[in-house]
Image (cartoon, rainbow over all chains, first blue to last red; front, side, top):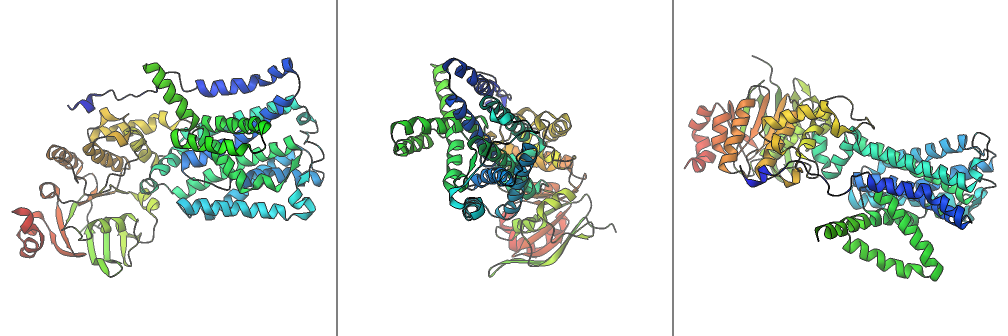
Length: 329
Length: 250
């Protein structure tokens, strides 16, 4: 028997069990508000909420980019749709989350379904361009909504109530609501990629023709994934509108879609953990650098280029490579 | 006479000016191993692609158990029981050998729209998959990523994936391509054991394999069937010897 056949068939990742990283991430997020009991002020809490809101959208995008190889360049549109659902409903007096949350999810899922029907007929660069086009379509539609502020956006009178109770208006409670939304999104996506459904999607990422010859209608599976990712981004938009008490077409701009892709790449594709880390690092770096100079992107740009060039697996890949080097030494 | 499992009627396909399938008519009988041989460029892979649905013929029809499937998409044909292997190994490189086969098992066992439950831990998927890997001698390599398997092992894995689909007809596109003598012998032994469970269309260049396995042989030349019959009859056919076998047999 050749040596390769004799090699141990069971391969395990070295070091810590797989759940260590996500457990650490969510523990830190859960304990963050206790720090502010000591330091006082709510700055940290509102930054933390913002990070987690974008992390929800980034995790959803990782589902598409990292697990299905569907590089969507219009993901921000779904955030915007979720946010506008909250804004427009509250302009008409519907201010309860029991109404606005289902509407936000339904509207973004419906947009994902209708655009996905078309986008998923294309591959590669064409898919990127057509998702961008549909994203821009949503952006320009929002910009031209004169009754809802047009370019200037729309201020929301107050955060949504939940079944009549103004729970979202307490910063700490809001923080934990966002926390549980992120945790739920993460666990849902984690289960999804390991399920039968997820296996078909992951297989199609590697070789769609092969998977179709096994008897799977790849298009349907990708469309379902696209709708799920769209709805989760809609959840992120619902929270964003409530966090900011304001909605604006800028939420849907292609720059915002690009930032989401950067977050996912920065953290590391196809791990879900990477998307959360990427969102946190991106937004915190933005926060920190913009305190020094308003031209912070001049510094951030080259750093991003270096990470993408030299750390193919994003920050997650970089740290695990470093850890391996240290344990070997 | 029993009804053929697969019937190709006046199939015609051209790429530009090049006619790759020219008025081709062919029957594959139940449990028959039907070999299709011919020189490079005779249109063998194009034929397999048309049967499995990756390429649409320009005209003619494909009947499966008497039903016209000419316009049916690839995945629907696979669900009917048409399994195929590829000339260039196209296993899923990032999946383990076991997961490659388990995905094939999954396609014929209940819903794949289940969003929960860890597919990797389903005994109902893993056990038939392990059995198929055992059939081709890959049981010990089940956990190895398919991309890291040796070439011959990938060929065997292709076969295991096709077997796991419990096919009614198996289309094998040069399963021995690029394998060494020892591996070829092993694959022949595997196919001989499987013969008779279902119909097989075997496209192959290795004449040892073809003459060892085939019930009937069709010789393809410029997209046309030059001759069709038992191994002995085809070997004795003067046109076949002149066009193809002559050089191979020397």
